[in-house]
Image (cartoon, rainbow, N blue to C red; front, top):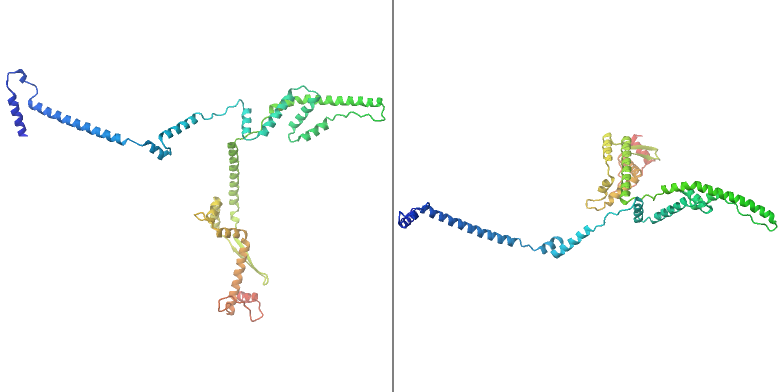
Length: 396
């Protein structure tokens, strides 16, 4: 550091030629000027290094951001190229923009027709339109001998929808039968026949007049029927499913409520299992029972309150891997359907084996041979096996 200072001092001394020259007097000392130049050089060096670093980083960034978009699109979306993906997206966008708008109808009747036709109820629509057209015609037409019959029949039909067309014709004939024109006999004089025709004409005109009057009285009712005529209600699939679901939920709730009430009422009456050993030859009947405790009944009631039979039998009849357990299925089903027979058989066999065992012990007789097989026991005295058993059991 001292060497540097000396060199700078010498250089400054040599450069000072005229102390009276105004140019020699400067505000910055030579030492300060040299230090400033050194600092400027350092700044320029740092700026150069910074510029080089930024250039390198930019080059690295440019190298890093170069991505193969075609490969990216193919790997992630299955398109061969970016252009193919763009074309597909454009088509989807157009389809979305041109999606069908909600169908608009002039009135509710048109909407009902449309929905009925969509559901394939063509016959209902045609019958409705035919009836509507016929009613409009009869409600506004002039009543005469020809239209009167149709008006009255229509009125009868609409008031009694359960009648068939044939039954409507029968009712009409009974109420408004027209007299038939007489036929002249072979030996009948013309005057006599003409008299009968005149009488028929009088009756026919009266019946026809009655028919027309009834039709005129019924015509306002036909006009009323026109305003009440509606297309059979059409339910959409969603409405049908919701209605069915609501009905099923209500039924399930009612069944659940009834089950809980019945369970609470009858669980205490469960007496377990009973079987009676019978030996008719000896006149012996021995009742055998298994009665669960009150604690067991309460526990069983609680289990049944939220019992899921599908889950219960599913875990018994199928393994965790879903394999059917055929033995469990057969055992459960057979026992449920033959419970009394099975318990009776077990009781009888148990009593019979106990009898033979007691007789063998009392008589000190081995009922099995050397080969271990069951042998037939034959007493040496006149007592039967039942008597032997009674003597062993009761000391008789």
